[in-house]
Each structure stands twice: as structure tokens, then as C-alpha cells.
Image (cartoon, helix red, strand yellow):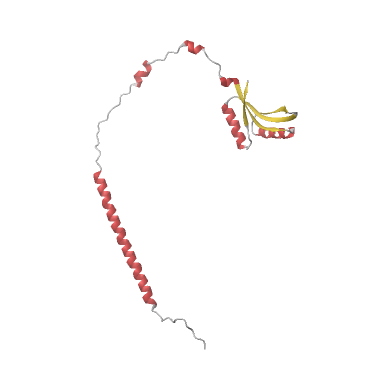
Length: 173
């Protein structure tokens, strides 16, 4: 006859177990509330000590007016222009140059014309420059002429938004 060698448990009272868990919960809750309240009181006393040490601001109704001297100084001071400096105007270096952006160089003219059409749709002034290098003909797609750096930067921004690389060139007039 088979026999079960496992230990047999004695039936326990379920109410005793739930009562002990409930009492642990209540005692922990009461301890937490007491601890929180004591920390609150301890911090409350520190705040009042700090506020007592702050000196009070005295309020005065006396308004002090400031003296402004520049109203009197500026009309009295005049800067005289020396005529010999005025006559010697050197030519502006920026007026002697303009900018061109190279946006591609192609061996096939149809490819260069396709890039030119794409750039014309962006609203840029475009031309194709035919160059012979080592016996081969290359077609450079150029944007410009651009009169100043602001126009060059704007054109480069448009090209960057269209994901087209550009090479800025500075050319003499």
C-alpha cells in the first residue's frame, strides 16, 4: 500500500492570519503619520527662525531726481570734418567683384541642361559655361552673377534647401 511521506499540515484558523496582517498595517500607518507630523513641525519651526532674522525694509517717500547732463553736452560738442580726408576716397573693393555659384559640371550637355532647368524653377539666374579640359568638353552650370554676399547667401540657402551642392566663386568685374 502506497504511503504519503509528506508532512501533513494542521488546519489553521484563517481569521487569525488576517487579523495579524491588519494589525501590522494599522501600526505601520500610525507610525508613518506620526513621523510625518513630527517632520512637519520640525520644518515649520526652522522657517519661522529664518524669517525672524530678515531685516525689514524701511520705506521712504523721498524721491531723488537724477541729473542728466547729456542734454547739455551733445549740442555744445561738434565734430569738424577735415576736407582732405573727405576727398581721398579709395575705390570700394567689393564693387570690383561679383559672385558666381557653380552647381555642377557635366560631360553631357543634356545633363547640364536638366540641372539648369531645375535651377530656373527655383527662381535663380542660371547659365551654362562650356569649358575644355585636357581635350574633353565639360559643361559647368553656374548661378549668377550675384552682386553681393547677401545675394550669394540667399542663393546658397535656396540651393541647400533643394539639396544641391554649390561652390562659390569670386570673379573680378
